[in-house]
Length: 209
Image (tube, one colour):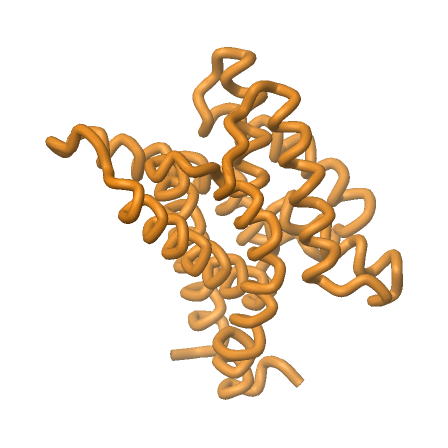
């Protein structure tokens, strides 16, 4: 496998995991990730589907990235912008076809934990692949650049996520304990998988360092 093929695989797998994780959060009904919370709140207010609204909003954020983080744009940006919401929609749709009336709280908590792990791993894989990141995921990286790394990725991500949760709440999105757990966990989770999985994987191909 070539370096480029590995990076493409990481980018695609990362986005699939992230989209699936968002779907799991929605199904568990304990709160979604901050960006999804914001988009679910605004999309429900407008009467749009989650996938359609996320595509439109990502397009608007894309303008910000063009101005302040053009180097972060790549094929991964387009894949994330166009596919993530629909992967989440498909995950929820597939669940709704199953003969399941309700999920016990214990199982929902387990789903929340699994979703956080998958989302953190997915973000780590596709960001570390350096083939472009989604506009929302680029915001913490832009903050790091503006502060010359004085603000860590974990802190920058947490700040952006908390703001997204507030906006989602103001638009009527359900903000549950899971939302808060996700908001304070993703940044550290991504940093963990960067160190333990994604960066070591690329170093084997002499891509990083």
